Length: 304
Ligand code: BEZ
Image (cartoon, rainbow, N blue to C red; front, side, top):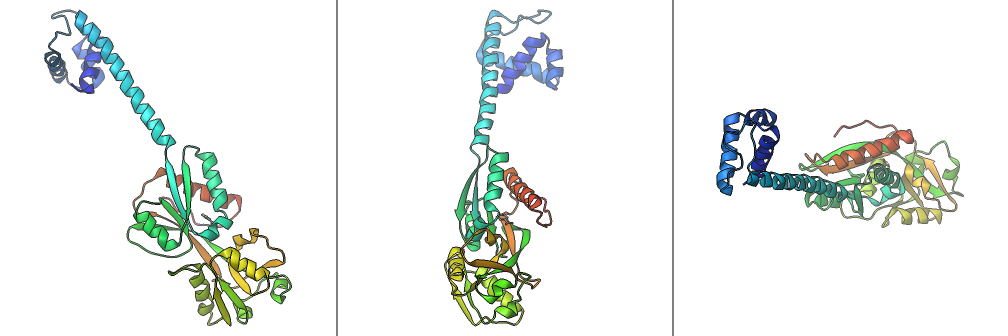
């Protein structure tokens, strides 16, 4: 016996007619009659009084009707409960490169939590190449990074190009160039690069930027992460080139100066599994754009 049989039987009882029940169920009458007969033979009881007009249930039929109603309403309840549980338990695992945490990432995640309280988020710091692997293995659902890495099973969405700035001790002559400084004016400086990784990353982008203009800084030193680069710059040990959102990290005696070159930008990407139709990733992207609108940041909207 299937739920379908119970639904058919209940409709016939309530309509007191096979014809009207068939219309209500959008099926032809002969298969409906056959299904009810099959039900009777499976139960080994007669459910309807033969020849009754309008159709009447037997005592056993009436009892079975009450039970069928209970089963059907319990099934509906279980279905909607399961849906609610599924909604509550949704978790989006998000990989991100460390520098984004000092920019807009916290605001974006907070907005998502406010607007979609049913979506849980798990944030995991990882490099761009680790994010690609983690997406493939299903460890994360979405990644945020600054590196243009390609993979046939990964979709990469360019969110925006963030302008770069120089972080330098306030006593340094560059700190007074608030209108902007060119890369050429920095070649004699010690430049702290971060993060220290094996693969391609933000530090290779900064090196490539100097190379693009035919320049080579006097001294390059890689450090583990952005706070170290900024801290060392604040100590007057050298300078570092950071995305403009890093300005929110305040160090005493550290100034930020815009870089003048057009190419002095760092892309920010969202990466996800190709063909992933997740509504949650759409909601996350929508929050990114809402924050951009609030901050008057220019971007080209991508529809997932
Ligand atoms: C942004 O600064 O544009 C950004 C940071 C984290 C996630 C997405 C976008």
